[in-house]
Length: 97
Image 1 (cartoon, one colour):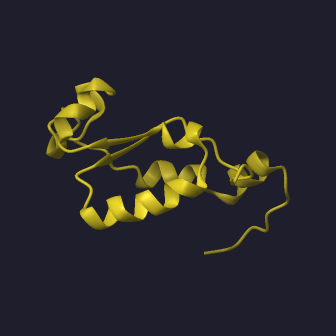
Image 2: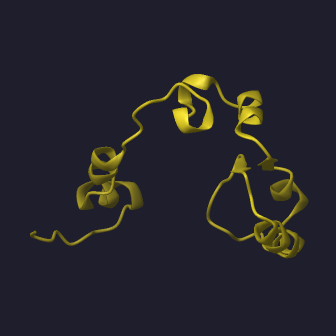
């Protein structure tokens, strides 16, 4: 069992997975703890997502109400070297573009 992964996963939701993905998941889950495997939720249709999330945060293509979920600017801001240095506590070199 792997108990040294440096991430914290509360839930994972897979929508409209393929049979190939299911086969891969069957193999991979053998190496994960029961706690982690219970946090993975499979949805045959997007409608079952509403049991976990409000419609306001689900994109329209999945039956929700969210129209614009472009996060490029937010990602550029959060991943800037200055932010990464404060998050990780390490010195990050500044690059000129």
